[in-house]
Length: 425
Image (cartoon, rainbow, N blue to C red):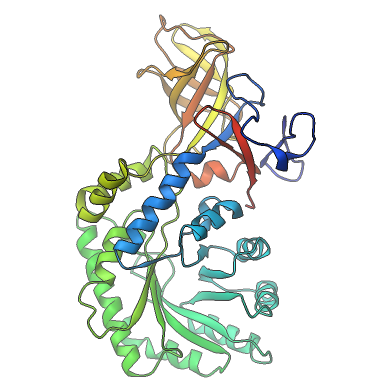
């Protein structure tokens, strides 16, 4: 298996062929063995059992919380993983950009929330082409008069209706209409155009921080629900099934609980959009999930029922290149291979080719610096580690590890590659 960079992109490409057949699609349970060094390192891999369990965990949570799930696909941008999530019971997929939407559509995804504004002539043309397929269900966010007028004029001479979710934001946050006392101006602007369909309300609570963040988020969602009641009373929505959607990967439990509490006579469909749960990590999202389990009895119960909670499924394996001085190991893993924005890679396993199985890495090993193709890992001078050994690393913020690889290998518990999946960043 070769591993090289495409000349048009920094993304990794791994060209894999079934032994003797030349057909990657035939790669089965007797595929390449990481421990037998039958692959090129560094290599990013996902554990098949971990991603399957994570999908099941979040689907069970959403069902028992009485919300629908439209996970954010920007984390993996791997349509095969989208299909796993949909097959597990997800309502649809959320995406961040029009190229992501186009790629998902051409891979068979037929219900998409663009968790962003639809802006730009070429982007509008692309969406218009996709909406020619009457089986494609699409929603986008709107938070400004300018965008409402542009969309209205763009779609005016078409036979296509565009589903809009009014995006509500918080002061100092990201996108979103700020002043709910004058939102009628935005609604009136949209209602000028018969091809624009107000289908619901959207928000993102992840920009709310501070010691009392949870209280602020609860208050924010209560305001969203009050807004829904007000808009419903003025016939602002253009369909009976109105959507209210929010939630990233840190506060989905709070959002789900608040959207479904005190909702008597409130007829809307609550949808949450966590993105990182399928891959998970050992950094910022593990910390966030630990907090979820501490404050959510439902999350705690599901973890108990399933034997564990969400599990980090992504690792990057690399050779030890050099021990140039006592206490320092240079690893063939760098910024081109793994995320480093939210914490440096964490050594998890140590394997010496020829041994039977990997061992847990020494607790004192720590990556202290990362460069393009190398990282520096501190060790004890007496540690049994040498060039040619292989280290498995976990990462924080999986989005920015996965976007460095055009293909991700799926491995089983025996460290054998059972298939490869493509990413479309």
